[in-house]
Amino acid sequence: MPMVEVAGKSFEVDEEGYLTNLADWNQDIAGYLAQEEKVEMTDSHWEVVNFLREYYEEYQIAPAVRVLTKAISKKLGADKGNNKYLYELFPYGPAKQACKIAGLPKPTGCI
Amino acid sequence: MAGPQFEVPKLTEYTDVPKIKEGAMAHVKSFPAAEGSQTFLGYPWALTDDWHDRAINKMGDLLGKYRSLRVFMDACVHCGACTDKCHYFLGTADPKNMPVARQDLMRKVYRRYFTLPGKIVPWLVGAEDLTKETLDDWYSYYHQCSECRRCSVYCPYGIDTAEITMAGREILNTVGMGQKYSSEILTKVQKIGNNLGLPGPALEDTLLGLEEDIELDTGVPVKIPLDVKGAEILLITPSADFFSEPHVESLIGYAKVFHAAGASWTLSTHASEAGNFGLFNGNYEVMKTVAMRIRDAALELGCKRIIVGECGHAWRVAYSFWNTLTGIGYGADDPFSIELQSQLDSRFPQPMHICEYTWDLIEKGTLKFDKSLNDDRIITFHDSCNVARGSRMGDEPGGQFTIPRNIIMAVANNFHDMAAETIGEATFCCGGGGGVLTDDLIEVRVKGALPRMNAFNNVVQNNGVNFLGLICAICKAQFTKVLPYYGFDRSMVGGVHQLVSTAIKLD
Image (tube, rainbow over all chains, first blue to last red; front, top):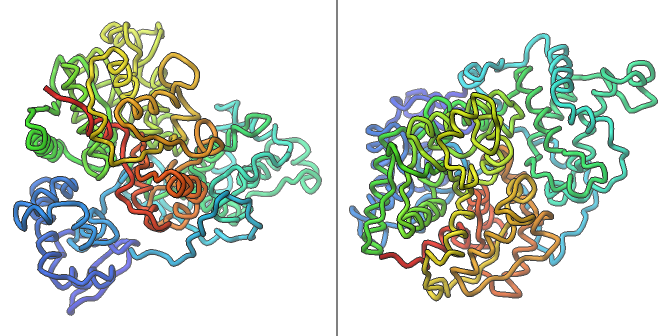
């Protein structure tokens, strides 16, 4: 598996650039992965990324899109609790792109 | 993940047969399967030293097991009827994506090792030794086939290209050339219960959240029950229905239909997946192992009916294979089947498609709708390949085409079909079926969607269509991803039961 070097630490990623080891994640590697994805991280992006990690810690899976939009809606207001807002933040799709930046495994299946 | 750069085909009024471009898609390589998942599935994960003999032995094994494969290898007369029927050829112009050429990648090897003329005078009969280059070609082009079987409709001999692709992938797995996407999914479904890897507690949490949403939206406490023993109906649906947009809208639709009908139903944590990627890989044993979870859940929960949600190849496996795989189905009299048959209610088809269930209730007048609630939508319907060409609905020929359309017209006022040569049994694949729905094959997916996108664009331009109605999780995910490449908004994509959900009246 390829390795990437960020802020003096090396990280193993898979062929699609997803972090192999969840525990390796930190803000530096998140910033690097976002850059690779051409996503400019703002507070709004971090809100999503942090929620994904919290949810994963509890359930061992990324939240369903509905669960995510609902959490965002509670936190940031109903106008942001929708799929469109998430796509604005993560244009390649919130499930895959946001998970990647959050250091979570890529969701698989018919999604 | 920005992905490889490639040129998106231009939309045209008709899908013209392209001028061929040799090797246009030879660079496409799906990511190889990793050690963990291949070991779990019982395959090597790197090319074995004895790959040549293993491949030929496996081919011999499959030729012996599946008489159809031998017939398909022998029967082709190279008439060319299939050449311009494949969406991947039409979208990529690569001649190896002509179904006959894709088949010939295997046929030339078959002739060399399994026919007398091929063994004696290979140069006269187009027979060739199996080389590593040939295997690489297989890996590339057997992952540029969605096993949609459109070519088979036009083949005068009825050669089923899908079966050849399946055999090709099984041989590739056997020599250590598995595909990451399918391999990971087949591991997750066996370890966790669904393709997503959604564990029970997460599923429970997700469903509770959806119940809240529905009640907030409608004021009616519609339930989405999980693991309820003694429920009459067991619903088996693709796990994407729990996870993704727009899939989840259809799940809400099923729940509302069950609620309105006063039905006793449940989902199962153990069998929280309708999709069965064992079909895509051509491995009957894996397909059986995956399907057995449904039998086990049905026996465990004591359900009397099994209904399948909106999932194309799941319905094909359910309709065509569940009887022998799991004993779910009509009439078998072996002890394995009898155990389940004595529990299932014989007054209903087993299994039943959710569209059959809903349409039956509509015909009986059990469900009431306010069609005007769908008036902002002008709808068309895309027939999913595995439903269209691999199964049926209802008790009349062509029911798989009429029933979903009848449902749409019962719940909405505006419906326009796409051109006749692109729907029904001639339907074009979405471009993401058969284990192709993965980011590493995005170029194949986008280009393969061209014929469907052309037909869709015509009804968008001419009839103002703004909603692409679907009954398959793969189609939903594929179009959500691919529509924007062609300049359409991804929110045009949705499920048939999403339309039901919008218009249904609840008490």
